[in-house]
Amino acid sequence: MKKIDKKELEQRLIDCGYIPEFGLDHTIENLLNLRNIENPDAYKMLEEWMETNKIRKFEPIEGIDLKFLRDKLKMKDPAIILAYGMLLHDPKRNAMFLKRQVDKRNIFTKK
Image (cartoon, rainbow, N blue to C red; front, side):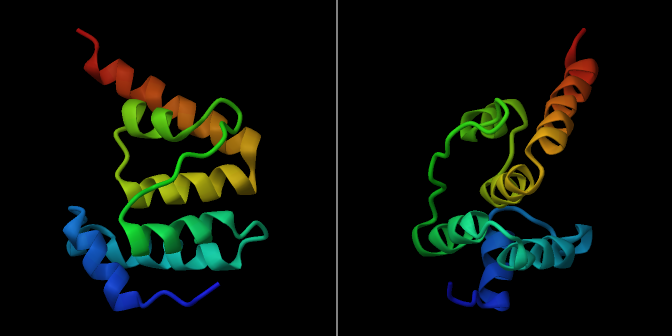
């Protein structure tokens, strides 16, 4: 695994629409800390995104896949990478959390 440049990552997040005043530093740290989790696949996904600007599909984890995160939760690429890391770390608990986020959104969007 190669080390990702923090300033380059910060600029990429800003380019994606992340706002420095709303927790950008925290998001950067969370992304860089993916390097330290037991399963390195989320950090590899971050490396690939930094190189290609694309997120690769992944096998569903407890029913959660790329399409779910993008379509149901409207996640941007960096958030998808973080969610993937969460799913790798604790699949059952974090899948339940993400599914509840969809339910919460539905409460506010139903008329």
